[in-house]
Every structure is written in C-alpha cells, then in structure tokens.
Image (cartoon, rainbow, N blue to C red; front, side, top):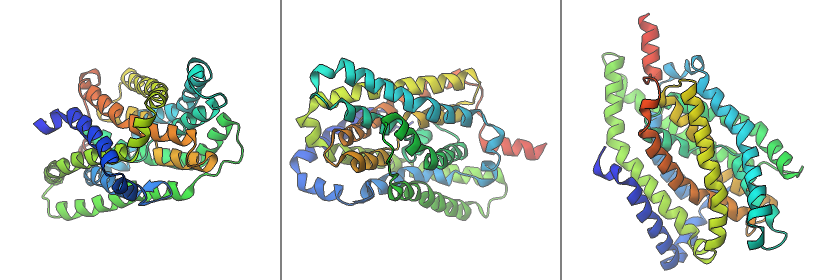
Length: 358
C-alpha cells in the first residue's frame, strides 16, 4: 500500500474541508456544477464514480461470473439484510430519535419528515459506490457485480411497496429516470468499457494465468485515478451542501446519529453472519458493504417528489450522502484488518480454474 493510500482518511478529511471552503468561496461554481444533473443524478459526480468503478469492471470475468450462484451464502446474507432487516431498523431508529429523543429540539410536527427521509435511505441499497468499497477491500469483482445486479432487480419491484408500507403512503411513484440512468451510468457503461478493455488486453495471452497477470498490472496502474476520483467526489458533495451544513450544524448532527448507528449496526450484522457462515473475505466484505451503503440518488429523488426540494426529508437524504463516505472508509479500514477472521480467500477465477482442472 502506497503512502498516499495509507493516509487516505487524512486526504478525505482535507477533501471535506476543501469542499466546505469551496461552497463558501465559490458558491456560483458549486451551483453550476450541482445543476448539471438529470433525475437527481449529477453528471459530474457520475463521471468521477465511473472512474472509480472502471478498474473493478476490468477485473470481471464472465466465465467466473456464470458460476457465482454456486456460492450462494454471500447473496443470501445480502438479500436478507437489505430487504428483510435494513428498512425496518432504519424506520425504528427514526421513530426512536425523532419522535422521542430529539423531539424537544425540532419543530413540532416535523418528526414525520425526518423519519421519512431515513426510511427512503434505508430502503435503497447501494448501486455504484459499493464497487469502490469492494475494490478497496480486494473483493471478488464478479461476486460484487452479481450482488449489486440482483439487488437492483429486486429494487425495481420492492422499493415502492416497502416505502409505502413504512410511510403509510400509497401513491409513491418510483423515479424511473433516476433508477435507469443510475444503473446505466454506474453499471452498464463501465462494465462494457471494462469488458472491451479486458478483451483487448488478454486476447494474446498464452494462458489464463498470464491473462490475469496482465489485467492485474493494468488495474494497479489505474488505481491512483480511482482514489483521486473518490477525493474529488467528496469535495463536490460537501461543496454542494456546504451552506446547509454550516447553517444548520445541530440538525445535521441529529440526522447523522441514527444514520451512524444504522450503518455500523448493519455492517456488524452482515459481517458477523458472513464470519459465522465461513464466507471468504473477498465475498464477505462487499456483502456487508452493500447493505451498509445506500442508493442516495434514488432516495433524494423520491424525497423531492414526495415532499419537495426544500423539505426536511430531502435534507435527510442529502445528509445520508455526506455521512456515508467517511463511514464507509472506516469500515474499509476495519475490513482490511480483519481478513484473518475468515477462511482462505478464493476468487471466482480460482474456483473456475479448479473446476476446469478437475
């Protein structure tokens, strides 16, 4: 690990400060960049996320991807946590904090919107950034892609009913533009680019081992661009919301507390389940990351559609974005230091080779 990567938390802290400063020094620039969006998907942030996701997509091997179902434990944990536990624990935390603990500190009658924003986040598992966290924990790229794709397919059918059940609102409209555009930008485009790159690099390889060595050397070269993309994303996210953060610090802290409890709690549950079930670390880490992080573009879009652009619910979903990056980096740090808790890692490529040899 390079010195730059070793002190990544420091660089992220500086990026947060830089973003807040830019929001104050150059609000016009931040507003211009924030306006470059469609369906609550910001295109500048999308390009940066694409740069972060691309190296992992190059590592995807469709021969191995076809056999992911033969190792179902990670998929079962991900689906159970994301759809049977996470939305309901988030709703419970929202009620606990904003109907009870924080009730004296917020305006009367507004607790419902705080709770709604938390529910919208809790019911939307991550689509894009989980590829980044998986890459940083040396996760199996094929398995990560399968997990995210399966979650996206379920989200198409399950998101609106779960939100409707928890909010008691029946006329929820799923923002299809946000959902489809996000999947296209964050999965389809980088995946196609990764496939083409992989084909061009490996078509002359003497054997699978040589092909993987070539891919590994390439992803090592482009990895620094992925980290730079992460830092630039942090600068923009905090730059876009700098005025809100500085003008309402107490509100931001109150929203962040249940989000922090939810994030660390869901990660602990998923990670413990993977450990108890003896899931390899390169599957266990991304498995826990998917449940912990959120599809914030979808949550923001639904909050705006239901409650309005300047609503408290929309603010809660935005705070979810700001909390997520530092939290996920801390979990990446933890996951990388607990690999010894899990059985020896076996990549999907290795499993495929073993099968072919037998």
